[in-house]
Structures are given as C-alpha cells and as structure tokens.
Length: 140
View 1 (cartoon, rainbow, N blue to C red):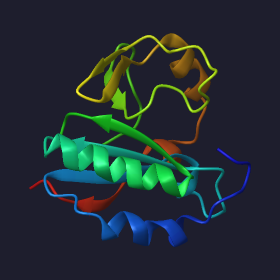
View 2 (spheres, helix red, strand yellow; view 1 turned 45 degrees about the horizontal axis):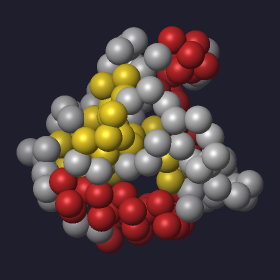
View 3 (cartoon, rainbow, N blue to C red; view 1 turned 45 degrees about the vertical axis):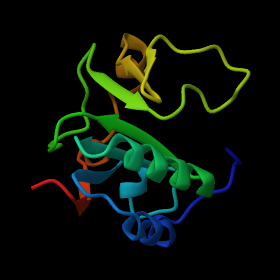
C-alpha cells in the first residue's frame, strides 16, 4: 500500500455501488474519526455468496486503501476482539515478502485467529475506533 492519506467519503460510494446481498459492511478504525485516514478498515459479516464476497473484496483492494476483515456472524456490536476470535481476509499479508501469518486458506479466504500481539497493539485505542458504523445492511 502506498503512503497516501485517504478521505473515506470519496471511497464509500464505491463500496455502496457493489452488490452486498446477505452481507453487512461496517466501517471501523481510524476512518471513523473526523480526519483523513491512512487506510479504510472494513468488517464484513454475513453468510452470502462466497464468490460475490471475494469478487467485491478484490475490487475494493484494487482501489488501494481498504483493509478488510471478514467475520461469519451477521451483526457486529463492537470491533473489540477476544483472543482466539476467528476472522478471515482475502489475503495473508500486504507485502508478498512478509512471513505468512498463522492461519489456513479455505475456499480463497485466509482464516486466522486473533493473537495476543493484535490485542496488545489495539488495547489503548479510543472506544470510537472500536465501535463499528454500519454502512450497508444486506443481512436482515
């Protein structure tokens, strides 16, 4: 990813243009603050069509600023994660030379669990950054 800063309002329209049937899409992280962010963190929940999900994630990643987390449950009340909580990404690492994280590829998604390092890194974040904002409701 390049070092540009991103304005979330510019990119949200691209998110909304995609088909999210049976998925909810949430904004989380620094993009919820009233300033320009280094990336746009998304959490996608639901149990819709896996090929649609992967296709949408690929399109968003091609735009550049998105860091996408996938969780199987349908509603997200907090982005505070517990140790060993399961989540997936459509990629393992942003840099192809980086060492692979602990996890497993299943049907084109890299499933992994939250480790102590991730919890430690995020424990002092503002509650606002951990409170997801629903931007697309595709799951009833």
